[in-house]
Length: 119
Image (cartoon, rainbow, N blue to C red; front, side):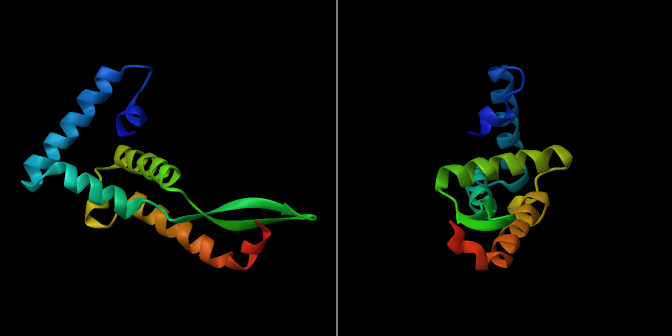
């Protein structure tokens, strides 16, 4: 999923090169298994719940819904790549743009918990 998200203009071999170079950099900087760090980062950023707009009568409510693992990972990878394009990935250190986005999503879902019965 990561390689397909990196993909730009159908150049998959270039996306693989970028991915492997990033994994190599992680290994050199941390001197541990880079895949375990990548999995830890993905688990840390994956949202459990999100909000979806529902029209009830004349008003629109943000209804919290639980995410499946596939949709959660897709959002996670998208957020990580978006954050890493702005600056190097800080998600492994529990900081950065992707972590803030997850926390913002969870706060919004918690604030709109009263509308959960509209599902």
